[in-house]
Image (cartoon, rainbow, N blue to C red; front, top):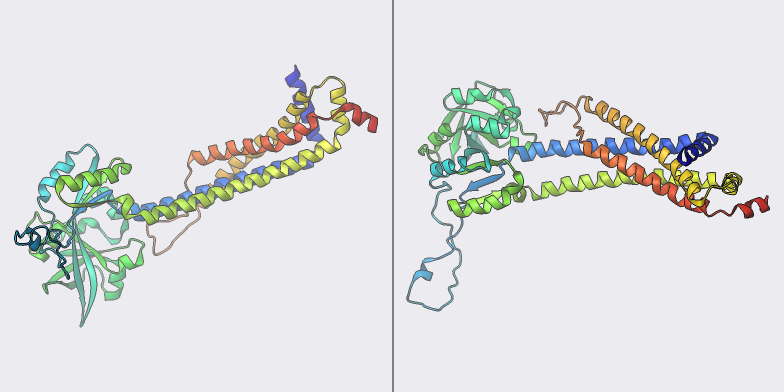
Length: 419
């Protein structure tokens, strides 16, 4: 009965200042709407950038880095025991960038329960021959099926098909920037030259666009067999082994393990993209900061309105206390008013936030640098809606708590005597 009476009194006070109540509710609605929209859009943008970079990056990459020998011949000599050796102009080891025992390594990785897939790769620095000019470039020798399955390679081929790379001998898919520089079309033949002077003809079967202009000006793709033929290497020759894991967070640990186990250099995705991940984190923090600031501002609006309501309703509060309402009851009345504003405004804000996010998500977004993106990116993560709802309740509760505490301490005798 008491709860019902408190609800009736709260409703009456809300209706008595209906316009102010609607303004306060609108403030909460606007804050929640912008909070949801801002976070959904920013998270969608982060996902887009993640897909652009991280989806094209292996979780662990095995390779053979060419470094100077740590132990020089003089250190092995017994002629100078217990001495320090100072050697200048040390040259790298006379090694090839080939991963040794690559076939055995690939087989072991495929049997690893942590590994989702393995894609061998060969990277070759070349020159594109354009008349009398030579343009620097890189050919990536790939297993087309593995590259499609693990890195969505087919999504970035804007002209031609990846299957043509497998079915056409001595073929190449050029980066769109390199193709524009050389003015070539699909079906044209081009000449490339390796660093040792070997010239090799290749047929263009497609164009690749990653969205990163500097990459598209130099990179191109051929099959492993074609790349091995260009270099004159056997079928077991690979310079990289790309590894995709089921759980990306295990990459740093497994990179160290594989480096020791397979006696090769290894780098994990977190290390390779540390600056990029930092940027995503900063953008997310800014989004949360702006959204929460909006909610706090709305809370101050509710606080001011309730303060004015208490000031104007001193007589009503005095009468309520005079007829038997306790300080806790008065406290409950004004907290109920604040929470009602927060719940109604918050619920409407969640609905409008979802609607505005959906509207943004269908707006066409066409850019030549991002061929796979057709609309503005939106992330409909339920976490954003949960955070918005909880924070709106907390904000409005606090906005109502302090004025209600003031109202609960009013002495009805002082008010009535003053009147």
